[in-house]
Length: 290
Ligand SMILES: NC(=O)c1ccc[n+]([C@@H]2O[C@H](COP(=O)([O-])OP(=O)(O)OC[C@H]3O[C@@H](n4cnc5c(N)ncnc54)[C@H](O)[C@@H]3O)[C@@H](O)[C@H]2O)c1
Image 1: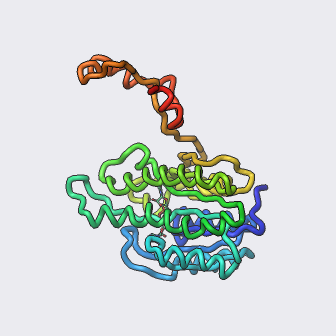
Image 2: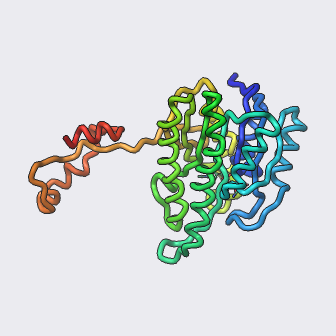
Image 3: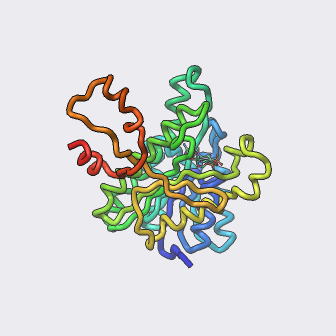
């Protein structure tokens, strides 16, 4: 059994849905958990200390260890306060699961700059801020695990979610770079792109999905990725209904000439679009250009 005794985990947005499930699973396996949740509505408006407190109470009632925190992770002060809550209660931070999220769906042509910025602020800036606030502690300890929460809507695009898909693909870049920079200090970062039945999706998914797409089936992957036994870093996984799959950004073999013109590219478009054999790193991409 993968256990987390003596590990301290921060889970953002853990008052509902996926974050709640991650918090319960890690706590049941021995982790000391900071249950963060602003307690607002799905669009990020409003705030309440209730949801974080309820989950922390449930963990404690079940015999686990948890403290509640209701700070807004999208602000530098809020993110610092979440990490400080972990330090005050348990003295360190081993694990950060950036899970807090909001929606402001609108078709691209109608989306306002406020709707765009609000979504990026919670998903991207919040994940950056909480991870960065915990980073010096992880570096000093020579150990850390970060999981960011992307989405199939970001990896593959989705109608009405230009803000959300921008944010969720942004998290892939953030994850990969934290993975690269953190490697020398034992810090590993990965991203998940989940599908689960929560308040965020219950109006969108067919009713029969509720029993299959449980949050717990996503938390199982999160628990593995934040365990000390997981050696993987900088990767992205889709996860839902018991299926887990690696998602990778790949570059096809490409087409190359010394005399590149728009017409030559047009004439060789099929070769440009080919998928196999692919390369997976910026280094291999550069090699293929030389
Ligand atoms: N449910 C899915 O199928 C699905 C699919 C793809 C991605 N996701 C992502 O998974 C994560 C969890 O979503 P969920 O489905 O459990 O939805 P949810 O609404 O149940 O949970 C999100 C939680 O984040 C909290 N939150 C929002 N803004 C916050 C802030 N500024 N500071 C602190 N907490 C804040 C909310 O109060 C809420 O409890 C989100 O990042 C979401 O985008 C979910």
